[in-house]
Image (cartoon, rainbow, N blue to C red; front, side):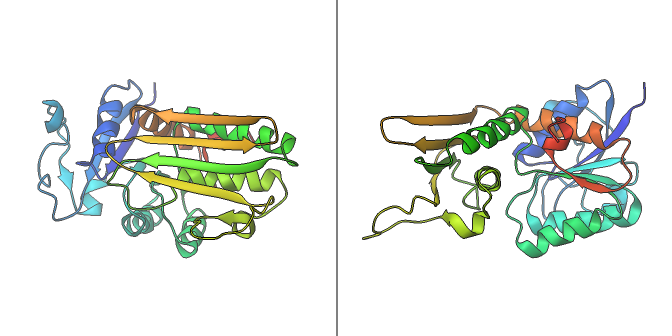
Length: 268
């Protein structure tokens, strides 16, 4: 059995630790590197310390040391950090799974450019359940294209720094594409005061931030006499971690190219 060597960015964060634990429990994967910011108190400690395990992999801030043995880097950090990591990976043949959200158009363009040099799987949500939900939304949008108002409601923990969530935006894009529209042309991100009647062609967004909510997303198709709600609710980051490992395995035989979870799940 071929073992895939995985490095994790943001190794001392909530998602980083979940990824490390999942990798250590996988027979076909090996933890080969762990990265964090230079100011992290975890720098120089064993990446498995939080589990009481000695992995022999130290958390590094230096990319050359942290990625020296890696086949794939899994990155759930911030856009500026991810792009820095990606530049190094593209230059040194390391494949990348990107779960980071909040990229500006320039950042998305940079990811596409780096994909000409290495294989990249980028998705706003790695959960298999969420990505199956995306497919359901595509089907629903095509059947509820007339007479139904579409609203996307998302909720996350108090520490999330971007809004709407990357997953909510992706849901909007999937729905807009199914309707033959561009999300930028129909999205409504805020309502306040006297707004007038709802534009039936719009896709509305509502954002909730509070407590320790992992991630809830509901798409409401509201018609006259009925409404349909398609929801996904995360109770743990385990689903994100397991989806990320599935994405890393998908990249194993890819040299270059930009992929998403729809590719990984065979929906394309």
